[in-house]
View 1 (cartoon, rainbow, N blue to C red):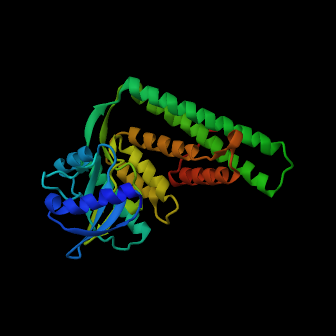
View 2 (view 1 turned 90 degrees about the vertical axis):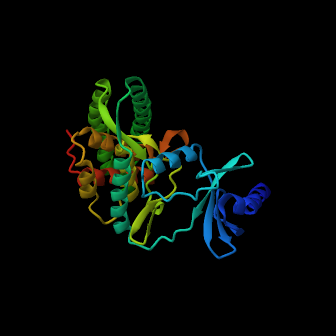
Length: 316
């Protein structure tokens, strides 16, 4: 632990009684920003230095009546976030996470995402200027990645074929399928933007990893909401799918059930666009724009699985 962090924690421990009515005695660093602390009565807490706008996020969720978020303790000023020496932090009660199979936890997480989205939902028209500019940036990036893939394939084809290169060339079809499918769903999303379509926005967790939902006493709580933001719910579900693609569960059924509450194909189209974008973005490029072979095969196989999971037929 750095000297500055040690001074910071000592100051918090000293002021904990006046700010929180608790008496912090000891602390152990978990990371650069998170510390596990113990009170004189044996109770344990986490102290975490916060991200930008954490105060506003917790305030928004609390006043929207969102109950599946683990909130920090409120200090004597009735605030979730406390400022100390130009740094903001919060004190979180230590809630044990009951062990649960990841397959079961994933089902619980998508249910809690659905609840979070529903509690904070509101309608807003897509911004033509902002949305088109963002989409143009994404398409420019995708074009760069696909050009790098084509260069990689030409290099493989120029070499003497072996078992490894044949595997790469066989998997290339799924990258091409992705390119075609991205072009198709992009047209649909662009059309919605042109129409300035009215769609649901909500508070997104924006980092829906299984470690970020606690299960305790029959209830589920989201933690680590600092990356949360207002956006279209498809983003949370896209990240949820990519995080859990390897689980032995019917992700297709779970996600289709989630989108069934929206009487509009836009949300699934946008979900599909985002998943494909995440996979292509994840292709590892090493020096001189050269694609990593291992990353190429892994991405191609993930794309194949995605198309199969949602019965997506690619136009030839």
